[in-house]
Image (cartoon, rainbow, N blue to C red; front, side, top):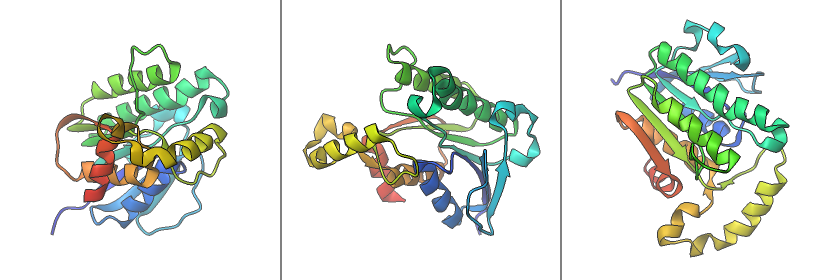
Length: 223
């Protein structure tokens, strides 16, 4: 019988995170799933251990957040965050601090949702923040770091994101025309991103791996 592990997920209330949590709970790979967030989720499961934490004081949490595989699905928008500073706090500071804590607790793998176009040298604020996050997470001591760069996400969100909903309506009918080099721009279901994350975690890889959106769809089909 294979050894089961425990997983930690941050951002389980979000679009990708919600699918990821469901897959983790249904996976035979994990005997325990720790979900961390600002509030409890309306979910009860024998494998689920929910912890309400203060992301501004992550350093105070100890062994209670130790896990083999850490799935980070944290993310917001500048509109929802209210300012560029608050956006950076969620999409950079919280992610990197979580990764540092996980590394200090000897986590084996860190799997994080980033974005297509992430680039620390970008002139665009969103892409720059995502790129800086990727750069700094890669420097930490994990057996493997997996970075997922989805294009436009498809799926039902709890909160309203008018711009993304409009883009989805425009792009979805054009998906079949996105072939060859354009395939990476094709909108992708959030559930496929979550499936790709679990598939990557199961591959016993080492080092840093960055997955473009078109590769995520291929990985999801293998789970």
